[in-house]
Length: 332
Image (tube, rainbow, N blue to C red; front, top):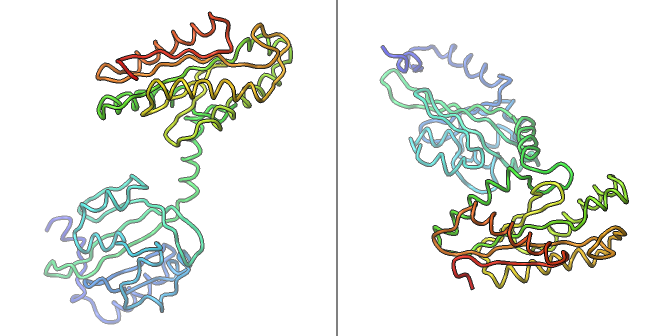
């Protein structure tokens, strides 16, 4: 007899007393647990499951409404997937977790659940396993649940720290590099234009020397907020590239759009009127903006960066407080 057969439970081989004891034991487990039969009707909804979901067993026993304890709209729970052997659906239904596994003993997955009756949204680790009779017929599925919301939030916070600049809250250089690579490939694949802007705060070292590093940090935060607040599309991506330099990725944006946005960003900061007594460009903090707009099959991250850097150098060489945008691949 293999390991799967050994795990099968035969209700035909146990007494009514033993069966009642097993049900009572499951009902009082500290782990939230429910059991559905071969027709997806709820057999057991234990007390821990009541506490977790805010739904009483008397409301669900004998029904197939277990989904409404976890979701606002009807959809299969993991136990339903095991019962119907619908394993191809797991990837779509549990995409928010991204962590699921399938074995001979059942299925494990993670997912955000809205918990309508409990009035809270929880991230649950879910396990669902089949129960067979002595002949090998599937007669029930057991689903257990663990609330791992705090662990998930801690993981999310760590991921955010790894991808964000601590001072400005913008994406950091690492995130920018990955996003530029991704957007460049998408532009080639979909044959869409892409633009990249590199932005430098003019005479920022002089600003720090004149006003101190605390004011310098405030200036960096203001510039970051101004750039992010001026960009109008969710697809636009702004990052702190390093030091006093920022970068903006503009997907599906041709040359004409890049020119307009570069000037909008420069003027938006000028309007803030941050005094800069040591600047050779203005009596206020200003920006030099260099950009590139590209289209065609020769787009890649390195070419975009090199061209945008060259444009930024040209803007600074020509007196700062200005924008300069180049075109690659015949972008109009």
